Length: 244
Image (tube, rainbow, N blue to C red; front, side, top):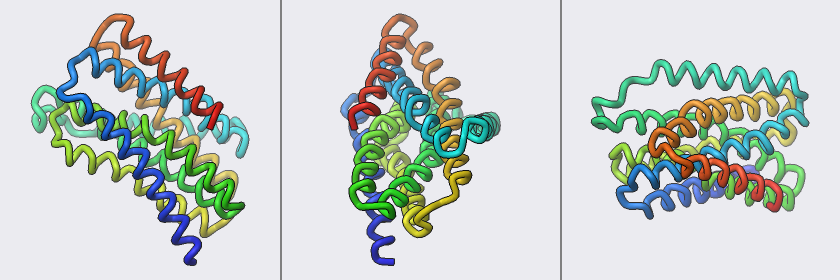
């Protein structure tokens, strides 16, 4: 049980460092204008799109097959669409920038769902061997940096206090620790369960990237800058996947 506890702590700390670093990078920009915000959201959207399509979903397909993986994507997308539809209007709470707060909430929910299967991967990896567990922890920590940026950026521009923004962002790391605990405790989780978890998370991310991040990036500054940011994010994601 002590080993399980240690793995849980490692999974939590890895995600905390990744998402926290992403939030801190956003805070380096004081009162970002539309041009900077468009670039940040574009890069984050492109990177997340790259990670989902070239890493997360292929992994789900390899584990449980394409039909089951697609089913998880559909369920995750519909679930996020439901949340999007019934989230309250934050405009009254944060003036005319409430839409950004709503985007941040959606992203934090999606990231939290995404982090649980990541935690499962860490826990299962350590159960198979410490070398695999450490390698997975490094990769997942790196992936969490742009995801932390994606959550913190819209909340920051909406006017939310920096400390609250940082708190909301790092709270998304909690499911990673829970997933690491479950993965380490069970050792080998059902392939069907892992496939559904990973593809569900991929569906939530795809909905948010395609429905919120990329359109908002384009609307903030309607020229080639946002498009180049998206392309740069996709390329960065491919590099991360290929070399770590």
